[in-house]
Length: 486
Image (cartoon, rainbow, N blue to C red; front, side):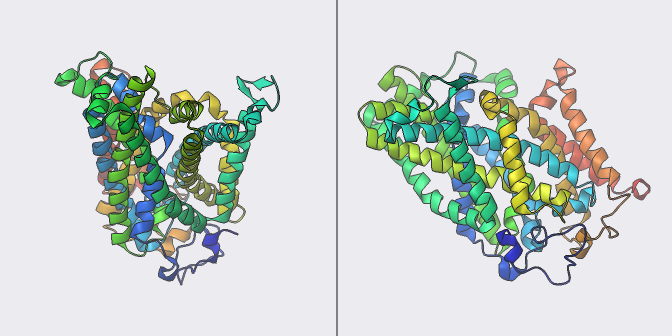
């Protein structure tokens, strides 16, 4: 049984219905223990990860300099923070997870649509992050025991040896252990990981600064990372900056939807709002800067840009600093684990539980997500994660537009808590589906995809999260004024 099942449930909610189980039921105020620090730690631990470290690599390769890249990172996070705090408000006020929150706008059955959109992406990211963590663990074990990589001899599958798959399996089991232990164990992990990861990141930055002779030399090296491409003018801002800004928003667009899965445990609205703001807007730009700065130092030290921190740590360790390499690689493993658990396990676990509350618990849902993360062959998707950001952000922007329009404009922050768990309640709509929400979602997605049909409309796809979200928001708010469509 998950930790959520042991928490006090809001009085008056029938826990015997087909739409509820102990993991989906609203948490009573006495069971909400997450403080401002816990939310800040959550975002610190999630932001400090390999994709964040490497995020600026694609931006720099497209012609953006270091400060333009960091501007895109900060602005993208500031934008996505708005729907995150709004949707988080519902979780904190009513103690409900994301799939239940989505019932208000999409219907008791229609809520499966946005929830599954979120869950499918999370399963993909879970596989990718677990493979990344397995690669880091493989290097860590190799540094501690040189014979590790010799396991299996010359055997290989899809280009990887036995040690890679053993490390992947071990890291997968570590993720599942936290999924099976429930949300309280995740809070514990994030709280412990946050200060450790910040210290390790700053330590890596200090090491690189000293190695190249100061910050000035390092930032000078950053200029050498930039590809030959225009850095200003309308073409640059529309053709380069906006797509990367959209990608940056898409980086956390998933969490902007399912953040109620965490804020349902908040002690107050201030705890979730301020905690998220402090944690996200400081850590993400800082760690992206560390990625740029340290990579620029590798150009001066090794004659090439080493963007992947796993490769860099291995280079450091083989250069006579084994202890430093082991410590840094351990930090990479912890960073990947803390990010993966919070960002890619909780959402699908609740979503799959919502599909069949009577038979699927949070623990079972997390296990399903873990299995899907393996069968998608994540090692084949590793190099495509930047493409993922652009491709799915439009869909999630449309779903977010509907949710926010419903909560802010239609409901004005007031939900019928008991009705969220009744198949014959105010959110049953027609057969459990609010067709207006589905239409608005489809309209937002269609507008974003229209950018692929005509080069003159390309900006709609490049800014998919913005275009899809705005259209879905306006469409839903308008359609909800037409009662005949219910």
